[in-house]
Length: 240
Image (cartoon, rainbow, N blue to C red):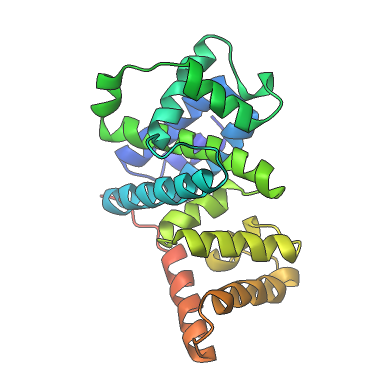
């Protein structure tokens, strides 16, 4: 199972179920969605159950809100509904690759694919998180097309882990896009695994984004915020 199998060996039963479930669904949908979704769940699978649930809720809210801004999602739609519909569509051979854009694919799911409402409203914890991850990843692919900029699963995971707001998320995307930086390096900077050659550049971009959102913050306050973000990114608490 590759990277999914590697991660499962070190996580709780919920994290394992999430990784397996997302991998299974995405294998039928396509590589683009799978790349985002698998990176997303493997990045946060070692969190405690409480933190994992909270992270997925934040991701759903933030990605959903940004998708609404771009006209990719209706207000009443949920990310788990989109994920379930994608799974159903794949059973009929309908995948993103059949469309000219993810926006067209998402519209098709909305207008032509039905799911059992009772099942949707009574999903288990594991299934809700699975479909939330898949649906959010589909929306991320649509947002990428609108932004004309890659938004990797590793960054999406940090949206949840850092409890980001919509404004924060959009500012980081905007700053990294303007600076021609890879958003994967946002996550690796906080995790302490970034290449030293780009450490300063990425650190300056994060600092710039924070300053743009919080013009009244002092240098010390910005440094403290980044330190707290690093601490949060490096927490990998397993359930025993």
